Length: 89
Image 1 (cartoon, one colour):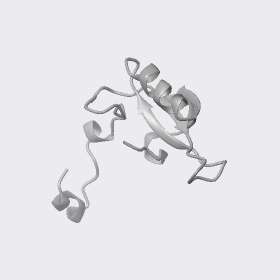
Image 2: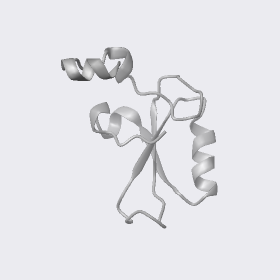
Image 3: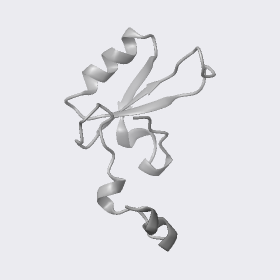
């Protein structure tokens, strides 16, 4: 999608709306949400979300747990539709 598509009112295509794994350089479809929070900068109830494919779920979870940021991991479809996610890459 280009800037001109936004000006024309075109929405994202199905391929662009697919949930993609947050692991660097991974373009696989995500099936997990890793909910996390940095207590130094976020309020306790706030949850940031990283998306993970099956292959990178454990790696991303370990990364967050090691830093004391991980809160929980849930199936992607169980929490919210894609349009309402606050995804951080």
